[in-house]
Every structure is written in C-alpha cells, then in structure tokens.
Amino acid sequence: MEKIYIAVDIETTGLSKKIDRIIELGAVAFEEDGTIVRRFDEFVKTDFPIPMPITQLTGITTEMLRKQGIVLKEMLKNFKSWVDENREDKEVRLIAHNAIFDCGFIKRDCDELGINFDYTIYDTLKISRKLIPALAKHDLGTLCKVFRIDNKSHHRADNDAEVLSQLFCILLKSMKIKNISIEEFE
Image (cartoon, rainbow, N blue to C red; front, side, top):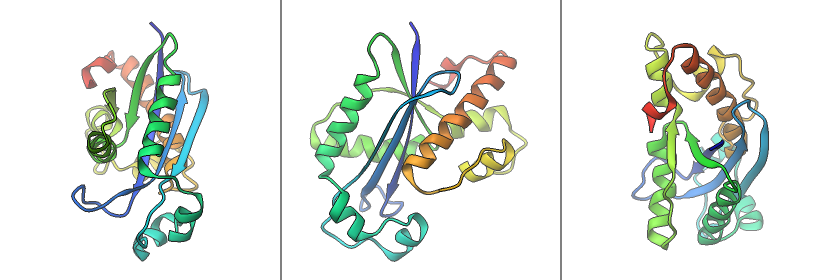
C-alpha cells in the first residue's frame, strides 16, 4: 500500500505539558518524493494573554488568536478529519521533530477531549541522531543548515511543517542508501 506522509508542528504557550497550551497547529501532507499535496494551518482561540517571549519567538499575538483562532476541540477535530481525508487508499504516517513534545501535546489534548489520535509517528530527531551521530546538535535549525533547507519563518507551525517534510525526504533517501528501513523508527 502506498504511503502518504504528514509533517506536523505546533506552537505552544511554553514547554510544560502540565500548564502550557497549543496555540497553532500546522501540517503538510506530502508524497515520498517531497511533493506537497495538502496543507493545514489553524490557530487556537484563547481566553488568556500569550506570554511576550512566545509572541517575540513566534510572532503570534493574543489578538491574532482571538480574531483568527477556533476552539481547541474544533481545531483538533478539523485536524483529525484532514489527516483522515489523506488516507483514501494510502497508509498515513505522521512526521514530527521531537515527537514527544509536539505529538505529546496533541495526544494529551485529544485524550482530554475524547478524540482518537492513534497514528504511526516518525520522529526526525531520533532518525537524525541515528543517521548522523557525529552531529553535536539535532535541532531543526541545525539540521536545516546542514542540509541547506531554507527555514525562512522558523517557529511558525505551517513553515516548520513544510521544512520538516523536506528534512524527512532527505533523511529517507539517506536511510535507503544505508539500507535502513523506516519501520525501524515506528
């Protein structure tokens, strides 16, 4: 069965899964050759002010979320529907960089809201550590520099998802050259 990959990234109010919240979710569905076939990007409406360091990092303001955001439950339902629309006759595989963080937030919120979030997820952080062990840092910015991927709007979920799709395709090619199966990372 043919696979469709979905690179996903989130922006949050901070780093703690106990207290911080998702404010943006971006994703791109792409084929193994890197062709992007669909995009998803939504803000989450908030009833609290966004911390200034987060606004400075992401460019996302409280006003943007209040005007353009939708309720978290609706955003997650929209995202799940969007992911499942990509299935048709294909296997869906989610891609995240540091999946414990991004997918951890998504899974936490889905669990709390009664939304099923059960997908195979590949973590480009783990993959890059295995493929390039000599590299000191494996953050998305460093990997973009190493592989010459243009990362013009870092810390915006839609941009980071697109950049992630490019990174994954490069890593996938490297795995094939080294005869490493992607299934090792499931």
